[in-house]
Image 1 (cartoon, helix red, strand yellow):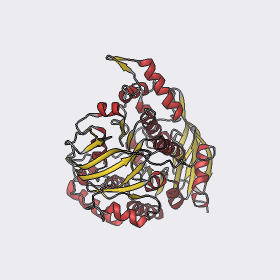
Image 2 (tube, rainbow, N blue to C red):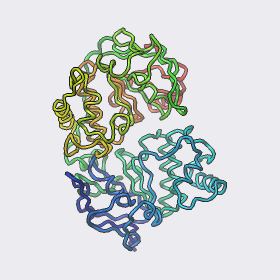
Image 3 (tube, rainbow, N blue to C red):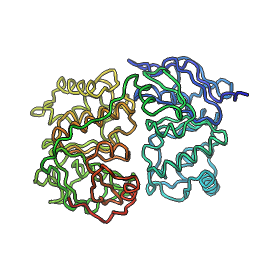
Image 4 (cartoon, one colour):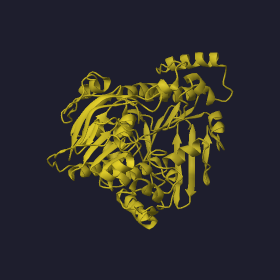
Length: 506
């Protein structure tokens, strides 16, 4: 007998000014099915799941849950119908405990004592051990995700929607998560899974629906389809592999000498005695589990946080006491991990965001007067070069999908021709085609003589583009090693701190 569907979407359409986000989308999910939703950035995945979760109302089309009409007008109604959602960006309060955070996201939450017992029981039953009394600010990224998942599980979901759930997890944490999801699937919970990590899709998912430009363009069985084939279905063309010319490296451009820095956050990680040199034409890849000093390192190199004299040298000159604008004028640029709110101002247009970091190097300002036509042209060049899906440079940054905003942020820095570029999570939440383009842009920068530091939790990315690899652990940097030939076990040891006390002197 055929299993009756849990959720049926029929002809869902949603349009915004200048773009049709979803165009006549139909799909079916059965109980216990792990269903992947694939597509390029801007393909319409987020809009679709927001309609399922009651955050967005469709313009036309219908939804059915267990054969009955389903049209949630808010997330509370979706949760009441059995839909849980774990977002890519966690919505947690650092200063509160696990139990307090979970209570805030529940309707009619029980008393904290009762809730704490429920958290322990559910976390142990699903292999996600978590103490309800721990302060969220002290948790790793993987543990924070557990908080979000357990909050959903306590409400007994029939459908669990997961948006890029492994983007901040270590390989070990990914395996724990997958065991949990397989257990949920075996118990009859359906999972709608969004990810750009196609090998994970092949390992986990039973079926996949592919969106392109808001339309369903295909379906496949991931275990029987190669990652490359799925990527090419998503983009509708052949996928390009990043290439290097292999030019000889030049002089030392950036020299860190015993860099120490306190974290501005009470829950951050101080940097401890980091020493490393990066040469012209080199890509230095820095890996590590989230929360081990990545944000603090970027802030120290960008000039957001100043350093003691003698710790950061650019072409032999001390720049530790220079702020971001002064460093940019010299050619030291950076792109932080948090694209919305840190790398880009959400309510400003793309033109305004281009002006924010490009004013000096693109000569968009003279004697205090801002040249807005030139800024618009700069934004338009970024949009064209990096295939940013947006109606135009006058649109606000928050109107872009996460991946498209990421392309804009990285493109904005790359096109300013930096001599040193530091990027944190350059392809976070970006589809396979766009990720390849961003990586190629970083390789091209290095080939043209820039020193590039790529901080990332995507080990495949780091191995693909890095000349040397180092790992951050508890604010210390391991000694960089040639990336070519490094084994997964060696990388894991470096990330776990086996070489944590070896400070790199290169």
